[in-house]
Length: 342
Figure 1 (cartoon, helix red, strand yellow):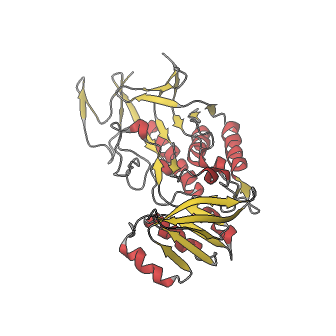
Figure 2 (cartoon, helix red, strand yellow; figure 1 turned 90 degrees about the horizontal axis):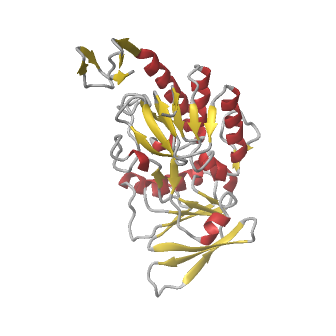
Figure 3 (tube, helix red, strand yellow; figure 1 turned 135 degrees about the vertical axis):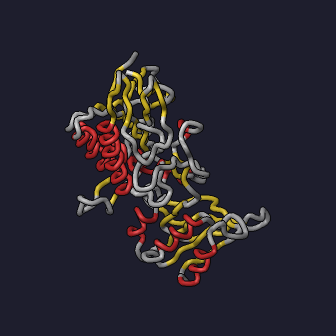
């Protein structure tokens, strides 16, 4: 049949590990599945200066190892495997791992995160963390009085450029098309930043460096007849969007138009009893390590309250009425908002 846990956590970024810390301290004996990207996006980040508790900064992998060790300290079971399928039709939930093994869970916390979209250039990955970034809020401080490039034409790209404008002396905004996709209000704000230069119909062709840092980039107008141009910059910020890692939940949970899991406002509840989502897989707004960790705490508290609210009636587990559940199920003459067969 498989092992059974009160709380299964899918994902090992700041949200997943924080959820594990809180769930284990609540004596829920959580099982955390790391997924294929152990530690999440921070494993690819160098210095993190904006996570509370590290006054001199911390490298991303070290931060994730600290969170992992804290979760282990409170007896979280951590399994380095990926969940490839979940059966939501029965209780406990049935989680099938990549290895083929099965885990049964009374509740699930989804913390699978999101993946930044990249251009696919060879040197993009080579200089990731030492000149190439997908987060101005995370890394903008390191580019004080330097020249940088921001790639993208949507709201995210303009917001990244505005944030960088507080530090960088010169910003080149590369927009692939002849117009922005960004909202008009953000386009209007560009007038406030004379050191942001917009290049329409322009693509980033290559990133040039000495192996340790970026020296310049090669850009080209979309017109094939246009000549290439070199920009002397020290940073490249790719802001063409993120993809939430929610493929596993399509058709099973509510996703918004961009593929993020939707949650009840002010909570991590998905609207599906016993299933909660936290971190970047449900957050398209902030996408910070600290906000992910905070929502991981919320998810564990929501799970604790959910499990405590279940009541047994004639061999059937039900949960007490709450605003997130609207369907009353009648079984064996018992009205339940969520019925689970023992």
